[in-house]
Image (cartoon, rainbow, N blue to C red; front, side, top):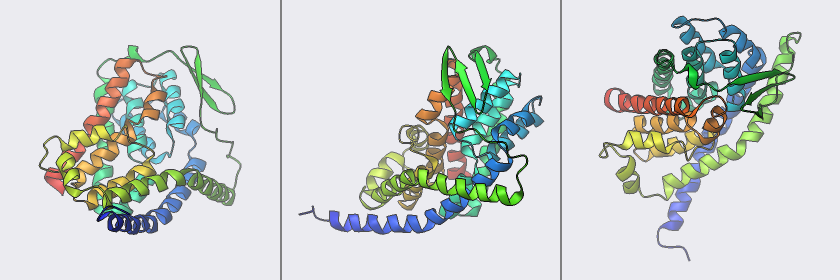
Length: 319
């Protein structure tokens, strides 16, 4: 026998799970295809070449722009970052790329549009992009270059980071696509999109399951006690809470949608997403191969600060 009310709550969770699946699965397949196209036409090594030699200001804008449109996971972003630093790119420029890469990308944009609408998404993209540019400029002027570890890049079929005598393999390296036709690029993108979708589907299902349980089972008053507007620390708590519960961006957004459905302010929800995407445990582990502890803390603090600022601005001025 189920406790009173639990059966109804689970049915409500199941209905919300189906609601999320109908919205997110088609969007995620489409986003995966766009990710595949971007990967075909803008592989990591091309991004690295484009960013070398840029200076502060316009270079930060270019770095944030390329970080936003390149669909790299952490294991691809970090080798590109290492290559930039080895080539003598300013630390601030590299940070603009690093900050924009997880926060502004095709999957985030498309899923945000499906969950929260185009107006919220536009505000989110503009604010996080500007934050990545400004954050990179500020960090570049702090004189933290000595906190970068000794980095060696090995050019093979794929890039490898070697620091302090250790190595870390990147994701599968990109093949030479210079001689491929557009139709071949599209075919490869479609094949990679399906593979990416299949690989990521368990995380999407997990995120939808957690989101559905939050929607149907977790009492609303409990959520509002911790993350509601009556708690002045709700936005910082959300930004900090994102990191330990991060599973993947595709898994975070269903949870974010459920929190919003339960009446949590959109700024608080977005702070949760930013904190999780930027300060996830896997991301910090990889960055530890490049940054000494102080610079790693500066990065984490910058991401949390961006989450808090975006959250407060949304809650106070936008929604």
